[in-house]
Length: 95
Image 1 (cartoon, rainbow, N blue to C red):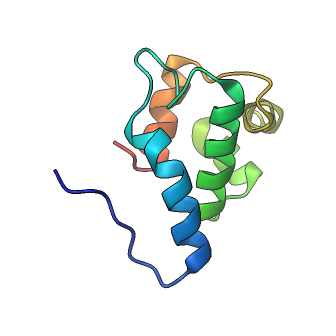
Image 2 (image 1 turned 45 degrees about the horizontal axis):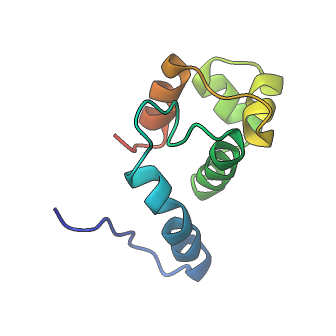
Image 3 (image 1 turned 180 degrees about the vertical axis):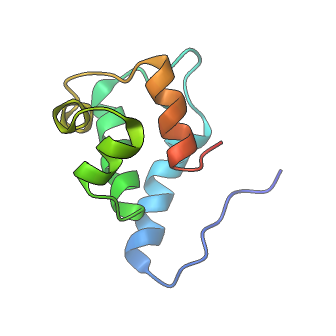
């Protein structure tokens, strides 16, 4: 299997993708969303949301959760449930 690539001229997007892709592509076993560490999850969520140009309100609606719950995920104060993790993977087209 070849390494994933991203087709863009934006150096910022390339740098962010290169920094988060190892965490996305090799998630810990039994992890909720790429990691069991809430701070790592929050870092990944923030960067993926910015890469996809979603506002907090947009992503909250897409995930069917409150704005405050999503903010807590992005701050690393809570971890996503298994069900929410599946939605996140689908939303960001990771699987």
